[in-house]
Image (cartoon, rainbow, N blue to C red; front, side, top):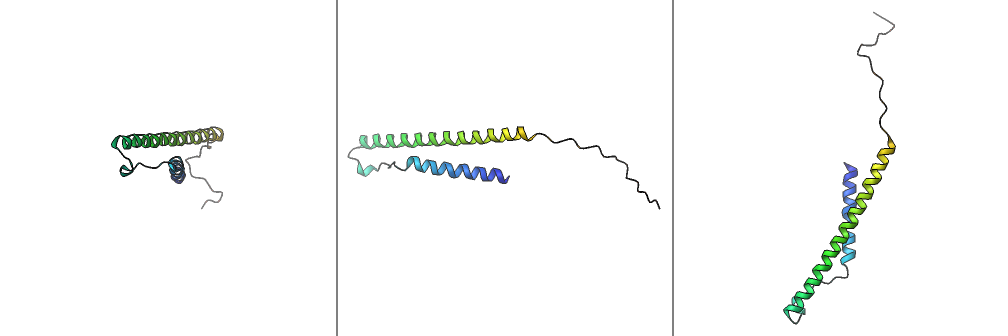
Amino acid sequence: MTGMLVGVAAVSAFGLHYFHTLTASLNPPIRILFPSAPAYDHALADYLGAVREALLTEYRAIFLITSAVCLAGAAVAVFIGGRTPRTAVSAEPSRSSTAP
């Protein structure tokens, strides 16, 4: 459970940082700064397209990293091997050499 929690936290931190990096140069359009509604609508569409592209890039990276970690874990699990069978234990109580 702790490993999963740490893994989810690491992927979340990476995703947030990567999204911030991808969108750091984007400036959201502010309606007052545009001379006309069509100019604002065009700028807003460009901004939303860039945000969507950043999200797709982030999700691709997250799923690629997660799949690589899962494949590595599966490879390790294959090479660890299974448990060795235990020897059968008798149901009879053991007899001690000193009887009362």
